[in-house]
Length: 218
Image (cartoon, rainbow, N blue to C red; front, side, top):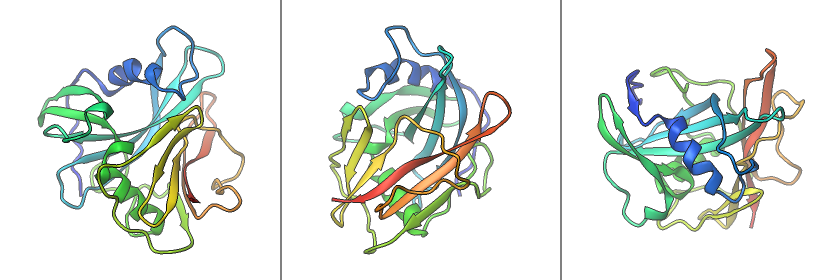
């Protein structure tokens, strides 16, 4: 199980995302930098214990509409060869030292563990507590067994999010802009082969919920 260190980060995760989000095709903000707050998310464990895996729900509060973005990130102690284009930035961790932060959609460790989560072979973990499952994260899967992601990955970004081909011929659609739904728990779109969903606190004390990722046929 990953150990969560409550320590300093320079720059912070939100500072890295503030610079990075406006460079993405799915960013919905205007010309000014977003004003981000960390609304929620969860973690997955790397079985090898080398890579930190976190899914951050970051909300842009710069307009009344409050847009929630999903940022899957991986944290590594050394650069990931061949993934220079996916580097979000570097930061100094108060315990672990320099960490290279990547858009996790380009990191085979994150994608492999997402497929394991969808299939029910991995457990979502609390974002800020060590060794604590996050039972609000729901998932489903139907169809052929899923395997490990290869490298290099071939994600594509557009205004609707990120699509990642997976080994068995499906497409993992990462919903970068989150659309809250009324269902509790949120249900996958009709025809989907699998999904991941969770909730996060809304601005008025309510609980917002959305599908974060959908597994579709190719």
